[in-house]
Image 1 (cartoon, one colour):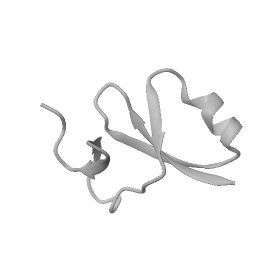
Image 2 (image 1 turned 90 degrees about the horizontal axis):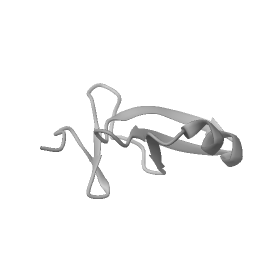
Image 3 (image 1 turned 45 degrees about the vertical axis):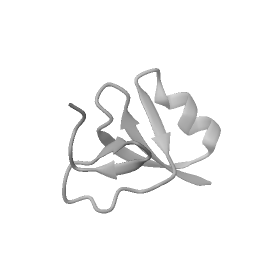
Length: 60
């Protein structure tokens, strides 16, 4: 079992976390999502994956 943190490739916005078999998780991703192993700092605000870290500022 593995836990992945899924974000949108369109705007790098964190979408959800998924736990399970890597093969199943990856088969459900589709072409519009990617993942990281690093969790966002909290779930109280919207996070974006930018330059290999989570940030609260979207790309400009």
